[in-house]
Image 1 (cartoon, rainbow over the protein chains, first blue to last red):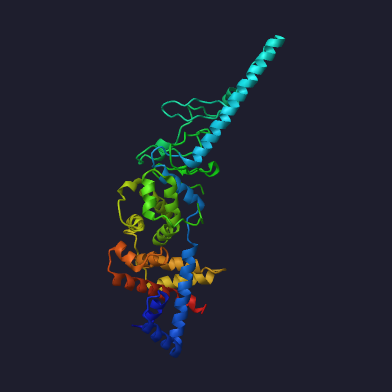
Image 2: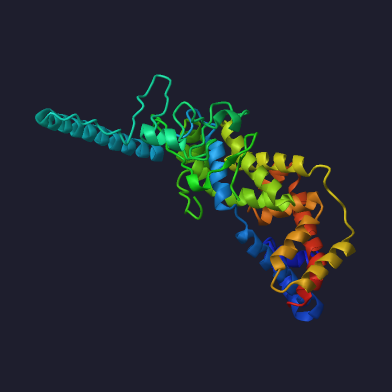
Amino acid sequence: MTTEELIVGHFEKSLTLEEERVLQERLAQSPETRTMYDQYRSLEATLGNDASAVAPSSRLDEATVAAALSLLPQAIGGGLLGLLSSKVVVGVTVAVIGGISIAIFANRNSSDNGATVAPPAPAVRVVPATPSAQPPVVAPPAEERASSGTPTPENTQPVSAAATPKSEESTTVKGAPNRTGAQAVGVKPARKSGSAMTIDVNHAPVIDNGTHVKPNK
Amino acid sequence: MTDTIPDTSISDETLMDRFKEGDETAFVELYNRYRRRVYAYCIRMISSQDQADDLFQEVFIRVARKRHRFLAGSFSAWLFAIARNLCLNAIRDRVSHVALEDVADSLQTAADEAEYDQSLEILKEAIDHLPADLREPLVLRVYSGLSYQEIADLTQAKLATVKVRIFRAKQRLHEMLAPYFMDRV
């Protein structure tokens, strides 16, 4: 075995005790061997540093997991989103009940004094769930919607079709910007089981025309 | 997602079974276990970072898409087989043979021009210049942490061949980087 093979084997921890002893002898006798040993030690240290430094960026992490999970049936469901959905449902329910109470109260008052008070436009409009699993959408009041161009459920398009033509199931990426540039607050119904992968809307991945989800750079 | 301590009490294969049943957290756990190792393989096998990013993403997309095709065996071996196929397809016909002297010259120039410690960048460039048949086992060994036997199985090479290739790869790196390391020892 050559000296170089012994040195590499030493750093690979693949030498036998006898081979280690031979290497130590050569190191003790030859300055050239020690120089080579030190150079290989530097190489090993640099390789080790590089190996520990290499990692995907957090945006690539997000984009990769989102793209992969989008291939599952009924993408974007489950755990975290389920929790989010339940919170939204509770919030919407409270808002609706509160709104109805206020409306009834205001109606009574108007009946009492004879004045007609129009009920305020609801701050949160609940689109009832349909058998086709249309997402409930938190929408602004009608006036604001008309003036600001905030998308309605009809013009809020999930990016699934364009995003994953190769996917075996439908894909929806939450938080992707819509055509008006506004953020649609679409809440998908929770899946019966599983967990969720949420994507920060501020770092919403850009969907290219393939399966890949490009992280914003 | 990053820098989490993986729960190694659950095997990769069990997680894969759960993922096939629709458990997304199982996939995320698998992803966390292998993200660095697969990414390191992609980025060191492919010179272009953008292309490596795409390939890395495609690896896990394929894991999700082909999840039902994983029936038995080692998940790690299956995962790296996917990564390997993608990377080898990408670098096919791109292998260029550069004279060793030219590489050493360019590395020395880069080192001379550096205002800070560029050892990692120089190392990366040197690895890029390794022939693919030497680079791959080295990357799998050093960056992905595979054993000689796992590398032999993955690359369908003999165990002795893998050992020799890793030795040759380090020898070539040593030759290319010797002028640089000479200043540091």
